[in-house]
Every structure is written in C-alpha cells, then in structure tokens.
Image (cartoon, each protein chain N blue to C red):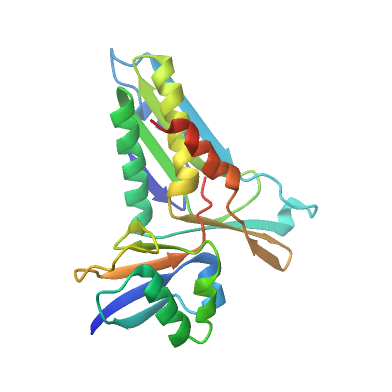
Length: 149
Length: 84
C-alpha cells in the first residue's frame, strides 16, 4: 500500500495491515517526524511538504518494486504526508513484513534511503515570517551506494 | 512545433514565478536544450540553469542528455528532492 495524504496516520492501524495470518515472522517499521529546526517556540514554526502528483506515486512504487525484487517480503506499506505540518508531527511511515527479521530490517532501511533521494517531495521550513526550502543532503545520496549490487 | 506542458516545483517554481508554461518545442531536443530555451523565453528563466536542477519526462526522472520524445505530454523541472 502506498499513500500520499495530508491527514495524519495511525501506526497501530498500519502495523496491523502488514500482518499476514500464519506467515508473518517479523515487521520492521520506521516513522519520520518533524523535529525542531529553529530557536523560536515551536508554535511560531511550520513545515510544508510539496510533491509532484503523478510522479511521486510512481517513484514510490518503483522503490517498493525494487525492494520486493531484492528480498522475499510479505507486504510493504509506505505513507507520506504532504501539506502543512508542525514540529513533532509524523511525516512518513515505512513498514515491511516478512518471514524473518533480516529482510524486514534491510528492506525498510532500503526504502527509506531511496525515498529520501528518489521520490519527488520538497520540504519548506518557516519560522515566524521567514521561509526557506530545505536543501538536499549529500549524505542521503551517498547512503544509496551501500545498496549497489 | 510541438506544444508541451512544462511544470516547475518548490524553490524553482518560486524563482521563476509560475508553476507551469506551455512551451513550443522543435524536436529533436534534449532536456539540456529545453532548459536553455526556457531560460531565454521566461523572464526569470535563468533559475533553470542553476546547478542541480533536475527534470522528468512524463513523470520519470530524466537527465540533461535525455531526448524529449515526440510522445511527450509533460516535462518538469525541480530542485533536488528532500522527502522523508
């Protein structure tokens, strides 16, 4: 399941959606949050996520397809929020279920690494009346190297 | 001439001052050549030539050397992605 939405998500509901009766031996999950990025009180800060409708979904599907090709997975769930968020809000959920923990851990890590550099999302931070677009982190691109076949 | 919808995102959209533009392309043309054409046609198009600007052809990531196909319906330009 791949969802791009403005609404918040419930980790317990997503966790249960990943379970396959009599098959699931491991579930690995990651949740990304908006952390404090300013000295101003968090009420004065906001955070905005823009995406490219049509492309972002394809990007995420391609990443999930690649994860399924690399590891024997039972199910994958990716939920990414867009729109205006606040400090401490949840941004992204990646969950993977598998028979064993190794492939669940690795696939979850792989999907997040690729999501950071290969999915059409852009972040904008605002503090008071000032806004700035978050620049890409070169370490995110470098972290993909460890997945080279 | 082929009319193609070109869309811009995030900081590039703000720099250029518009989210989309209908370009008239004379194919064959590469993404790099399209960037330069738009940089000349749009008032604030020089922002397209800044380092790191990425692109897509019909929702798939593209590179500067990629040729825009005759079947194209939409090209996008945007800064490096920062999701997650």
